[in-house]
Amino acid sequence: MESVSPATQHPEACLQLLLFLDKRPSSSEKNRQIRNYLKELHEEFPFDLQIVDVGEQPDLVEHFKLVATPTLIKIYPEPQQTLAGSNLVSQVEVWWPRWRISAEERITDPQSALATAEQPALGAVARSVELLKLQDEVFRLKQGTEELQAQLKFKDRLIAMLAHDLRNPLTAVAIALETLELMVEPKEDGRAAKLTPELTAQLIKHARTQSKVIDRMITDILQAARTTGSQLQIYPQKLDLQALCEEVLERFLSLLESKSLQITTDIPTDLPQVFADSERIRQVLVNLLDNALKYTPPDGTICVSALHRTTQKVQISVCDDGPGIPEENQERIFEDRFRLQRDEAKEGYGIGLALCRRIVNAHYGQIWVDSVPGQGSCFHFTLPVFRP
Ligand code: ADP
Image (cartoon, rainbow, N blue to C red; front, side):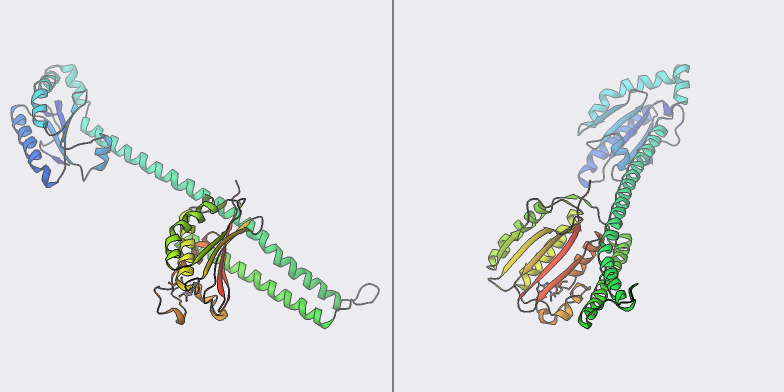
């Protein structure tokens, strides 16, 4: 803010004006006219003038609810008055005599003069602008707190869900071990349970597989905790997956048609709503459909389906009957910048699936591919069911 008069002192403080200007070249002539005119008036009767560049003081613009420039506001004596528009000079011409009279009254009338001394009007403006900024800040902080609380609630619920999910493989391991135990520990009557070597081998294999499942789940949880904490922020809300899938598919129809690809969908109407970030999940669906479209040869078929997998999870699948993915690379394709050599000639950077995994993990879900090379690929991911 630039000040024409030195300090806000008597008698200048008896008339206080604020002039808002903008720096567009097209405004320079209007700005010059009003500034020159105010200079003339200042020589005739001194007043306090603050000149504000609207670009630099958006809070003041907001405070005075300005809609045009130049705008001149008489702050004091009260009542506050706002003049704006292209004929600003002629408006000031009309009002100036009245402004001057009321300012002179403030000088001659000791009561008013006292009031003036107690009325640092421009200072009050600065304070209320400061207040506005603080109110904004409080609002932002409140919003931030609400978001954090929602995220904490989300994490609490998911931890409960994961604990529940961990129980299944753990129970399976426990049953396998208990059964094996029967073999080595004879019963009270001295007889040991009879288990064939095949069954023993099967039980051991089962226990191993289930402990791998547990290990995988724990890795996922740790990875998800890292992802949500640092890199990828999600804003989960109640989300209607069926509507989202339909909306995304709509965008793909003409592309699919141009490649003579068929699309089928199997999304139950009673699919429960999920708790997810719609923008992020849209990204996942778009990436998977993009890949299906890119890697499936003409006349192929793509299928989008969903199922309510457990009470807590919904599974979405995007399948195609394209070239498929060799078994040894079915995990690696989710790594950053990994592409199959076979597909190097096709457009892409190898980051789409890595991003999908980060997004799905941030929702404490899982993403994987089932594929038989030469027959096609099915990408599946899970999301938590929404619980009010
Ligand atoms: P991009 O498609 O940009 O290369 P992605 O991360 O989306 O990157 O995919 C990684 C790799 O996985 C691809 O390069 C491709 O080799 C393979 N891939 C992904 N989707 C499919 C699919 N539907 N069918 C066959 N291969 C696929």
